[in-house]
Image (cartoon, rainbow, N blue to C red; front, top):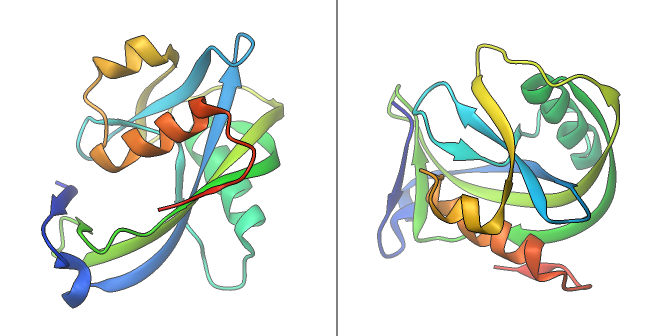
Length: 155
């Protein structure tokens, strides 16, 4: 099972991985699209790793299409997240410190669909998200998205 592990400078012995996720608002910015991961059952913003040969906008759009079935356009960068106190450990034992870019996106077509990575999806308000079993490193990204700050967060 994929795990997120916290500890003081735990990422010191991990590899770096660049990732991105997308925040898709609905209902006049009152709700955000979340997906439930197949590997650990937790809710998160849709996204994933940047592949070699891609730029971050291509990676974000590809990951959202793969995970949600939606074609998206990137609107703006909401934040950059790179905590050295957090690693993602995959089932094979690989550990990564993720440098994640969170983008606000808008839907440009497609249809929400499930796949082998996602078992459920839905639009949730901030109050509803508070009660979800959410990937812990996504809470701050969602909080930042709802803050409506003009400049991107660097965390």
